[in-house]
Picture (cartoon, rainbow, N blue to C red):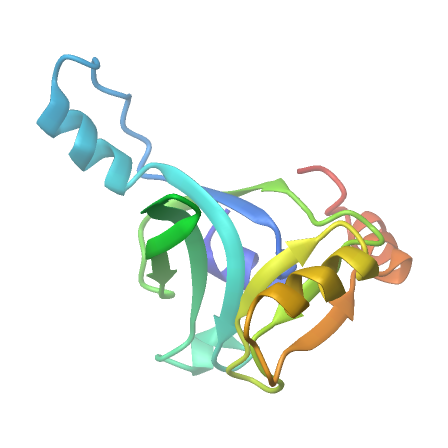
Length: 157
């Protein structure tokens, strides 16, 4: 899939993989493997920004949350990757958020970013009580959203 198709069809909270199409190098080639992992990984879609018609917006992009690094339950570094329409990488939707899951955004509006995907509303509210997001917005993944994906041929991951 291209950047355009991910931007148009992948829901916020989906797991998206990207690849440059090259084969994975052997584990013993640490530097080559590290370089390969830069262009071949996966993450959760946390943000889409720009115009819906991304061909008309040169600043359009989407952001994936790839990993958290830390120790003792404290996250020190969050690794996010943003991709623009000019990317030559290929993308695949690995998993869509299930119906009934609840997205927690850091704020309302076009610049909102997914900060947590909870299995249900009670878990989202519990998570919010433990994490400081005063302007957080909660949004449930609906059956209508999943049905629209199936009707448009997007049910397969």
